[in-house]
Structure formats: C-alpha cells, structure tokens
Amino acid sequence: MIRFENVGLRYGMGSEVLRDLTFNIEPQSFQFLTGPSGAGKTSLMRLLFLSMKPTRGIVNAFGRDTSAVSKSELPGLRRRIGIVFQDFRLLDHMTTYENVALPLRVLGQEESDYRSDVIELLKWVGLGERMHVLPPVLSGGEKQRAAIARALITRPELLLADEPTGNVDPPLARRLLRLFIELNRLGTSVVIATHDLALMEQVDARRMILNEGRLSIHD
Ligand SMILES: Nc1ncnc2c1ncn2[C@@H]1O[C@H](COP(=O)(O)OP(=O)(O)OP(=O)(O)O)[C@@H](O)[C@H]1O
Image 1: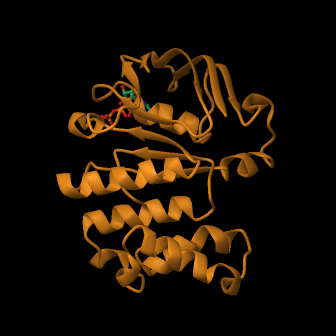
Image 2 (image 1 turned 135 degrees about the vertical axis):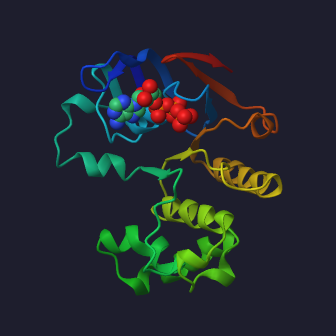
C-alpha cells in the first residue's frame, strides 16, 4: 500500500534526519513506530502522509511513485490516508460534530447524506453525548477521540496517529488502543508513533524502531 525505497530526508542544508529507509506498509496491517526523541518519527509520519517529499529515494503510495504525481492528483492520494496529530488541530469555533463532519463538507457532500454516519462514528469513539459542545470544553481524551473520528470519517485505508496516548491516562490509553485494534480488524492499516512502552506491550504488533534516522523492523 505504501512502499519506501532507500528514502532519505534532510531539512534545508542540515544533515539527513532519515537515512536509507526501505519498508512496506501492507494493507490491513498494524504497526508501532517508535524510537528516542528526535529520532525522526514525526518526520517519517509527514512522509507517510505525503505532506513532504523525501530528498532522495522513492515513496510509492497506492501503486504510484509520488515523485511523479502532479499537484492536482496529490489530494486524491492523501484522502486515502487519515491522520491524528499530536496536538489534535480541532477548530475551536466548531462543535465536535462539525469538526468531525468537516472533511466531508470540504468534499462537497450534503449534510443530509452524512449526518447519520458522523453521529454513528461519534458514538463509536464514545462521544455521542459530547457532539454539540465546542472543543475547548472537551477533556484531553475527548479531544483525542474527536481527532480520531475526524481522521476516520472519510474511511481512509491507512490511519496515522502521532503519539495518540501522549496526553491521556493509562485506562484511556488502553481504550484508545482497543479502538485502533478494532479499526484494524475492520480492514484499515494503522501506524501508531509512540514512546509508550506499556502501550506497545499490550499488542503483539510489528515495531518499526527509528534510531538516529535509521530504521530497524521487528515483526
Ligand atoms: N521543520 C524542521 N526543520 C528543521 N529540522 C527539523 C524540522 N522538523 C524536525 N527537524 C529535525 O529532525 C530531527 C527529527 O525530528 P522529528 O520531530 O522527526 O523526531 P521525533 O522522533 O518525532 O521526535 P519527538 O519524539 O521528540 O517528537 C530532529 O533533529 C529535528 O530537530
């Protein structure tokens, strides 16, 4: 589904922050991306989300070499990927419901067509009672779940989550993990970037470990 071949990344004139990355993200797979602070996890997530291009090597997404994809085709590929950012990036002046519905509105869909899907998804992440409130009154864990719902509303084939349990207590972290596992069972590939060893120990999943920009994979 996503293939990296000898990918390297540098910012400006600096040294490479990612080096010689070669790996596949398979359909319906589940993996953790981990490594010490500064190892390059967020940079690798940006490359996976196709929001940056590598400085060398090939990133192939859904069968397309992304270096050959035109600017107008890129949004179509990125729509197949959902992302949950570390800082949520919810819009504070819109309700939880409106935040989650936003990607569909942007696609030009009518509210009458998506309303029940948004409500169902909000219930699935446990926010059925909170859909009409604004993000500033949500707890950290509720914001996290709203961000997850917004990433999922377009039914992406791949979900990327950057430190999804960074701001929540251990019971909620386990609940979020169950949500990701359930999503994966339903067919979505999942990549979770995390420092949280306790979280990773709960699942027998592939670990992609970054260290000083180099990747080792433990299946
Ligand atoms: N926009 C940028 N411009 C220049 N250097 C950057 C930029 N973003 C990241 N870097 C550098 O790239 C390296 C990897 O950073 P990155 O944020 O990818 O690591 P990380 O593993 O996600 O770290 P953390 O776990 O602390 O979030 C670091 O040396 C960082 O300073």
